[in-house]
Structure formats: C-alpha cells, structure tokens
Image 1 (cartoon, rainbow over the protein chains, first blue to last red):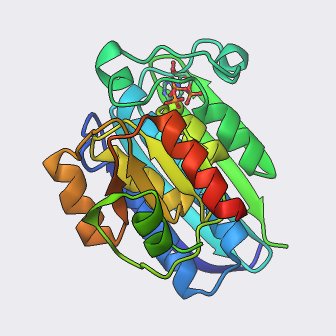
Image 2: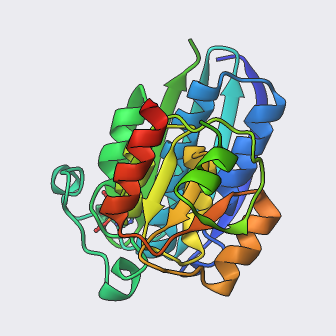
Length: 141
Length: 110
Ligand SMILES: Nc1ncnc2c1ncn2[C@@H]1O[C@H](COP(=O)(O)OP(=O)(O)OP(=O)(O)O)[C@@H](O)[C@H]1O
Ligand SMILES: [Mg+2]
C-alpha cells in the first residue's frame, strides 16, 4: 500500500466525556484531504465504535490510521482483558457493558457488527489477559 | 426542507443552531448509540431522548443534519458545550418521539 499519511492517537480508558475525540480528529483530517463523504462516513463509524470499545472494555489503547491512495487502514491496539470468544462478541446484541455505560446509550452489542458492516476487511486478534488488536480496511472507490 | 424550515414548522426550540440552511433528508429515531451510528442517514434528523455528551460525537460522526431532543428533554451542560464547539445543531420539542417523527415525515415529503 502506498501510504500518504499516518495518524496516531492515544485513547484514554474509562473517560467517556472525551471519548470520540480520536475519531473526530480522523474525520477532520480526511475532510481536509477531500475524500468522498461516504468513505469518511464509513471510516468514522469503524473508528468510533473501535475507539469506544477501547475506552469502555479495555481501559484505553492506541489508534493508528494509515491513509493510502487505494484504502484506509485502521489499527486499534489495547492491553485490556482480551475477548474470550470473538465469534460470540461479533454477534449483534452481545454485550458485557456495565449498567453505568448502558445508561449513556452504549451496550447495544452493535459496535463490532457495525465495524464489520462498514469495513471491507476486518480482523480481530485477542489474547486473554494481554489485549486486543482490531484491524479494519476501508477501500476508497 | 431545511433545518430552519423544521424549526418553524414543527415547531422546535433551539439549543444551538449551526447551519439553518442545511437540507434535512430523512431521519432516525433511537437512543442506543451504536444503532444510531450504524443506521442514521447522513443529512438526516436524529430524534432521541438521550442528552449526554456522547450524543455530540455520534451526531458529528454520523453527519446528521440536526439532533432533536424529544419529550421535553434538555441537553446536559457538557452536551450543549460540545454542540457549540463542534457546530452541531441541537433542537428540542415537548412532543413525543413518535409525534415529532410524524410531523417531520409530513414536512419532508411535502
Ligand atoms: N477491545 C475490547 N477489549 C475487550 N473486550 C471487547 C473489546 N471490544 C469488544 N469487546 C467485547 O465484545 C462485546 C461486544 O462489543 P460491541 O462493540 O459489539 O458491543 P458493546 O460495546 O457491548 O455495545 P455497543 O458497541 O453497541 O455500544 C463487548 O461487550 C465486550 O465484551
Ligand atoms: Mg461497542
């Protein structure tokens, strides 16, 4: 892939008042690059859901976005508890979110399904007690 | 129909108005943020009873034309602050989500 730009962000865990700032930063950067709104929208959904998951489920992590000529790759890495059953976690409606975050509107169990739906490729790698890495590729038409 | 058109016709109260001339194309009703993120159409009106600060990020990233807080809900102060900072149009009504959606639908189709 021909990289044009790499963006990196540190995402803080547990802090839901600032959650989404990395995603907003990515959106602004892609706008400045003049990318198609539908591509920006897909990246925004994937990035936000992944960012929120790191905040809520993994005590934070890092986000890296590689903007190439043909595609955009989002890599989200955390050192959280890991996902015991990835297949189950990917199912629509599955959640382990606490009541406190459900009260804010999270915990529908739709984040990972959204990421799958809006990306062209998605890979979830997770080791219990070590952490999770989610990689998503969004192709630019 | 523009955002200002909806404000006048439904009518809606204004917490923060960013772009009154933005056209409103469709809408979405929902309070679970991942559903909204995955389903709300860009340029649509998002009707909700959620009033916490995370509404701003979802509205911005889903690129909705406006957020309408129904059932007389008012924004938590951090949400209003973020809406102002990020240029998100935040409106309100005492109508139920259903009644507001019915009026919105009639206006958009007209
Ligand atoms: N980075 C992660 N680290 C650990 N567990 C995770 C991570 N991401 C997801 N999970 C687990 O997978 C489940 C499903 O995630 P998903 O994003 O689909 O739904 P949710 O976050 O629970 O709710 P929503 O995204 O709809 O607000 C989570 O409840 C959690 O148990
Ligand atoms: Mg999630």
